[in-house]
Length: 455
Image (cartoon, rainbow, N blue to C red):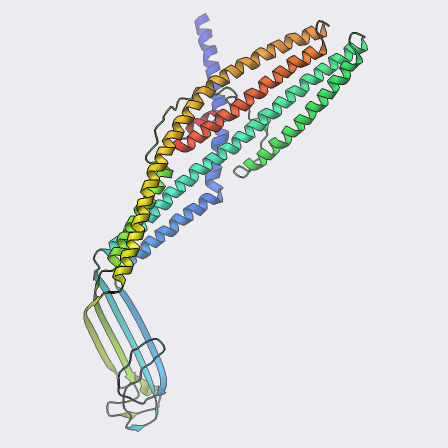
């Protein structure tokens, strides 16, 4: 029976502890869930990805046959002339001879031209690959952005918790000083202690209230900053953070950099993008072979014998229909040198990013190892800080009883209270420093699970 009762008690304690964990996880997890749904920065990153996907489709559409249509209805003079010219922009052409009739005629012209690039030495595939690389990079950039956003959210949440802890610390200090002031005041009235004790304790109590107001303002400011991600109202008292001062043993001891970490992956994909762009530039200087096809209709108020009619409806007469098919080879010879230099520039940029990736990987590896060493030692520090606070708290309670009994002076009691205050302050500051190291490591490893379940 005793064993059964003990099992039920242990199970109840474990369940209670699990509920605390769930509450803790639900707050930070809920904030992150709301951030993913509503934060404009994430929507902007997603829009950039969608824009790049549309660009991919645009690049792919270049491989389709290109069809151009035109139709003209004109009314003007008809005076033929011999000779040749370049059909540059700003010129128009009139052909034919007028033997008799009107000096003005109506004309109609329509055409359809289709061209299909059948071979371009792999340039189209290279452009498609380059567009895809850019889209993949934007996806990785979004992952990097989410990682930085998690860090920012965790830091603001830590500030919220830290300022809340400091506010409760200030409240405890003011409560202790209020009790000491009440005791010293009563002892002074009884003639057991001098009146100066009451004045001194009142001064210390007012100073503690001022400190309490200061931390209340900081806590309110931290709350407002956190509302950038989570707009619902909440109070410090509603969410007691049990693991801030006494965290669980850090179980994620990975000291290796994840090769697929978004920061490294983004640099690698950018390097790949520049490589494909360089290849595209090299292939752009090669010839292009196309199949060409066209159909044209022409109507004119001028017949083959040079008789010209000025009537508008006669512009649809004397029609001529022509079709033309063939192969076309175009090659911009002058681009050989220019494109080669552009390709060399892009290749060097890809090479630079490759070196930068190696440098970042080494720096991240070193930083993770350093953070892991600090986290392990800071966990030991927090255990000792907790023991120090407990000892100072027990000693303070005993000295309060001795002061009320007239066994010690007010100065001695205030010194003990100051020791307790400093011990609690040191514990809170050490806890914040510990969690800051955890946040920094979470960003470098890309793993925020420990933070979202323990802080």
